[in-house]
Length: 84
Image 1 (cartoon, rainbow, N blue to C red):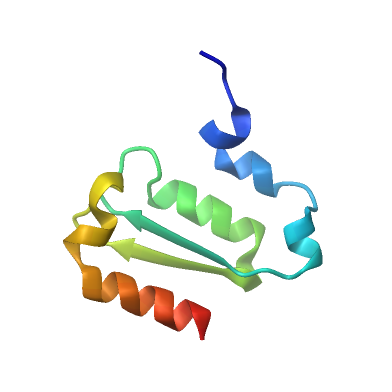
Image 2: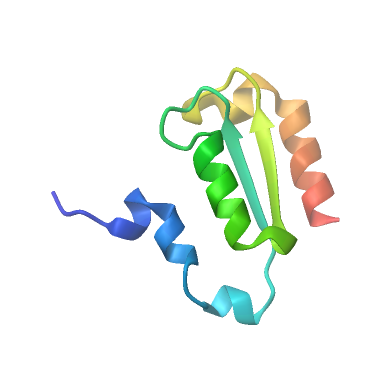
């Protein structure tokens, strides 16, 4: 098994200037409040790296596996408001 630092530690893929910075892309992070890996602490760290362009949506009582299915209406609303 290989260790992919960017996949395992998403913070590192945002530390330097990237093509995404050049095009001023917005970032939306959707995560479940019960996700043990992509938790609130990690999301806040990622948000601090690109605060002006980052939106975080927390799905209450969800894990990584069920952020969509636990509250579809709120999930779609987060996507809709992010795109607009």
